[in-house]
Amino acid sequence: MSHTLTAVSAALPLASGWSVHSLWLRRRIEAARRDPLTDLWTRDPFEERARKSLSRKQQRAVVVLDLDRFKAINDTFGHAAGDAVIRATGQRLGQWAAEHAGVAGRLGGDEFAAVIPAYGIDKLSADLFMLTGRLDQPVPYDGHPIEVRTSIGAAYHRTSTGDLSTLLRRADEQMYRAKQRGGGWRIAHRLAVPEMATVNGRRDGRRGTRGEVA
Image (cartoon, rainbow, N blue to C red; front, side, top):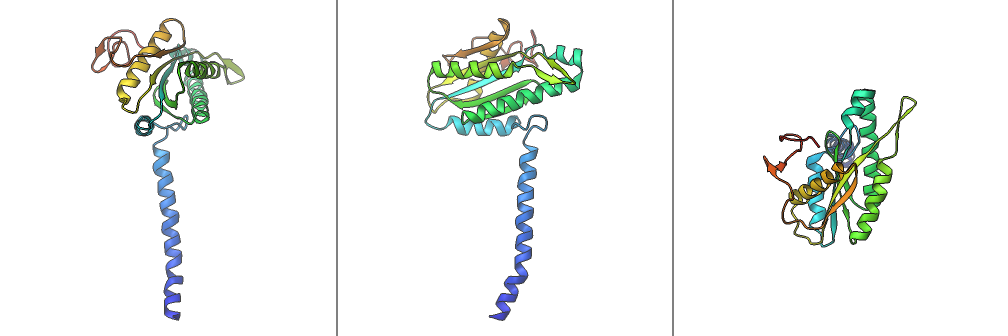
């Protein structure tokens, strides 16, 4: 018995050490999957969680947004100010998504996305109205407020068989429509057929295609 107790006692520090190491490793892996500026999920882990959310038997809304005239903010106030705007936008979106039991991510640059439960078009409209009000608040920087405007598109998903790529594409199209009219938000009610031309698998006019940048 004494030999057994001695062996167990000797093993405890080793087991504890491995436990701490495993916890540290998990935290490092999770940190690497989050955007360092906003603490939101980066594209791949966001899409993993978004697909899991869409697989549940509950209506969902996929939301895509980006900042209007973001290049002008960088050109006028500098890239540090642009980072402050990106950080604030990500934090505001992340808080909104968490309040709605959803998930949010930064897709890259000034482009963000979220997936939230949806309870009808009217409720989704009210949620997007609330989100626009939050995101369009000025961001304080160096003692001065920086005016912020966003364009938001949403795809309303009624079943558990939706394809994330299609929903992101339709939400992106609505975001672009909102941008064309000066900001705000729009909702796609029909998901089957894209409204805009496709170039290299992306909406014509998006970054990486010809035409207008949005």
